Amino acid sequence: MKIYKKIILDKDNNVIFEDSFFYQGDLSLAGIHYDYKSTRGVKAMKKKAEREKRLAERKAKRALKNNFEAKKDDEKMIPVDQVITLSDITDPDKK
Image (tube, rainbow, N blue to C red):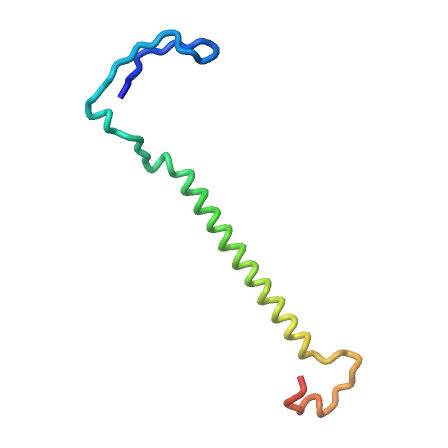
């Protein structure tokens, strides 16, 4: 693993001066480790998106159910201008 002590670059990112050495110890085997704090924001955003998705599904389901019940009630109602007869009340086949 190459460890840099000092690097000087020009305006075009060309290396002018470089002071470095090669290291073969325990540190060279180490990788990037993420902790809870570094991933906290991403987890919070995922959780919020899942919560909003569930809420939208519930709202859609509730709206569909309410619309279905409203249509059902409309089918059973007798129009206001129609006279209600005994057959309308007692006929089991009539909807």
